[in-house]
Image 1 (cartoon, rainbow, N blue to C red):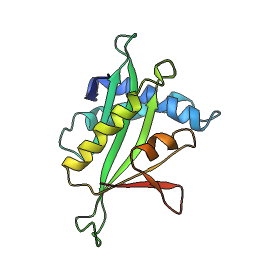
Image 2: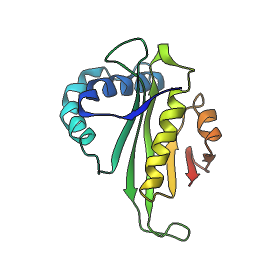
Image 3: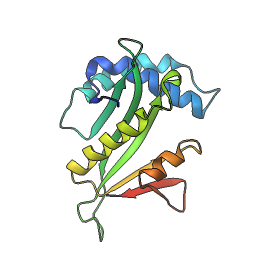
Image 4: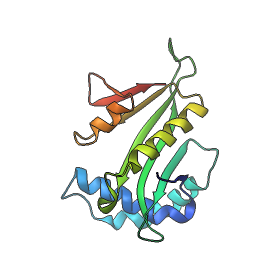
Length: 156
């Protein structure tokens, strides 16, 4: 199927391009990509931190060398523990995007599965995300359940 890999600093421009694909889908008349230049240095640095609390997983585009087909990014936050989650580590998925010409091939699912594994390896017990109506079936199929607000959560 797909070959998911951790995004590297040299992927930063493509990561931002796919993030813009997601933003444009959610906000069709949203901001232009002019902010990408200001974001690149920090993103490159974060992508180079293998042991940090941020990770992005990608699939290379099968027909466009140097381009990415799909992206999933997430962070780990600390929140004071609670019953059932005494460590208080919470994963948050904040960027999921697939290039329009590479959709319906399982790339986002494969990237999400890899990110969920990354969360598990780090002791995360809860993962949260917000979903568009179009994407919600994917997340529900992965075990996420609606909460009273628009947030979906998965217990690992």
